[in-house]
Amino acid sequence: MESVIHKIRFLKSEMGPGEKKLASYILENPSNITNMTINELADHCDCGNATVVRFSRRLGFDGFQALKIGIATELGSASSISAEINKTDNCYEIFLKRANDVQITLQNTADVLDATALSFAANKIMKAKRIVLFGLGNSAAIATDAAHKFLRLGLNAQACCDNHMQAIIASHLNSDCVAIGISHSGASVDTVEALRIAKSCNATTICVTNHSDSPIVKASDIVLFTKAEETRHSILALSSRIAQLAIFDAIYTYIVVNTDKTAMQAIYDTEIALQNKKYSN
Image (tube, rainbow, N blue to C red):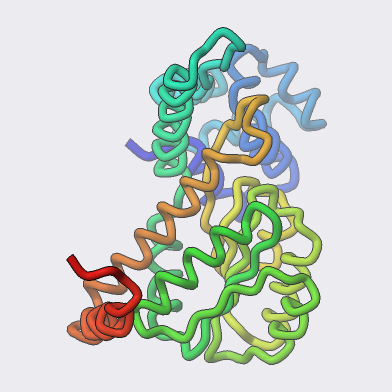
């Protein structure tokens, strides 16, 4: 069964102004909907009750009540409320709760990740003459890890985690290049600006983000969404980083199985080059 949230994201661009307000609110606050009346939602989004009904039917539901049930079922099946970590928890108990958060995040991300967009992104990366990944702060590690994976496949990949260098590199890209911006909030000014510059140079722009209404989405040709409900202890957006890593792992594996023997030869050459970096048994 197709995710309701995924369907809202997919259809949002086709909606009128009132329906787009509803879509934006639900995407950002899905758990609030289950306790709202149609009048409350309409008032909150500054639209009429008829717009809410039309919005619900566009998504394949008979009305607002059916839409609420659909969203509530989806949230319930994903166990979207993370377990709170208490001061009395020992380290192993905290590990179990964090592992549960990661599992929930991966399932939620699977629900909102557009399969077509993911395949499109993978093919663009596979065929690009140059790949640049932009990430700052927490996202820098993800950019570096992804570039490392692509380099092992023999791709011309580079992670750029300095805001000045991001702008410089972006300005020298072209239509043969792919620029990837990684930002959980989607509001990292320098990363968004680097994608805008890359886009103006005709490079294909891809972003990995958690928020549909963020500035980075507008600067991207292809958008790959994660969905992480971080707890108050996860100020570093830990679960979302796992989801981001999983997306790049999927792209890496897709390229391996879709480039005949080229990628495997590149992996072999990499391992040969690194042999003297390890102690022999």
